[in-house]
Length: 372
Image (cartoon, rainbow, N blue to C red; front, top):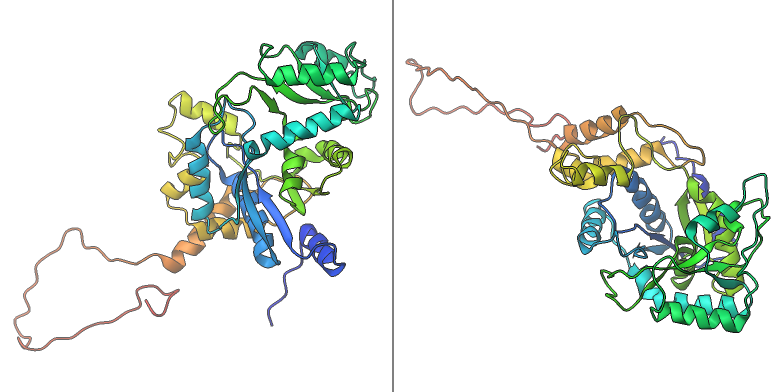
């Protein structure tokens, strides 16, 4: 009798939501920023998001979080799509945060009109200093009590490109004494005169991650927005923005990111290896990128098996790289063709064997596959 595999905490949440009729279908999203190639850590998120909607009724969107035009390129977009397909998954909708720039701008206008956002002329250094510390409350900006009319005028002029980079930001008006420092009037929009890989020069103000992420989830009616543990502090702001904007209530859940021994899991550090020519490119076989692993001989099945074996947890842990190597050996042992090669053959002439007689000696090509 095969032992039934226990549910992870996300599957338990989803089954409860379906049982209670909260949702008729489950919608997830995989939202990479197109500022580099995907690595093995992203594979866990891909397998989780797509795996949940393969198991339960629903679908997954592939959404590119392209809100920082100075680091994003179309090359990265295409490489991400190739990697997701190679891993064996298909998305229902291909989305971009830039698709929602107009909607996000209107959301910002709504916050200003509700008195929940204001334009701040402070520098980034001044804003950081005003934040306070975990044990000391922050200080309110002197621009915090601008009138709604002045904020609307300044924000529109920001959009029209009247001000230089870094001269003004749009900040949420929440609580400078909040225990969660992210709730101390976080920046929602910044000025950045840069060419965007999709929208060109149409915009010179761009939403910050927190202004774009939850609202994009809501626009796509994502039911379960799955992030890694470092985004736990962001959940309060995620919920605050959705509540203030009165939009579809997507909900964020967090799981432990993948950490592997002897493996660099920072896209910034991997980019440095590429830029400094320590490797031949993002798909160098020495790189822990999905394309690098593919060139090294890893199979999509072995990576999916690895992600399944490590499971989904709420606590950070460190996985030994030997488990990943075990998974690829397991799969290749079942699928690899066997060949016997004689490098230095010696010619043998049999003089006492009938010339018209033929004998064939059959053996299994692969002991794991009896049909081979």
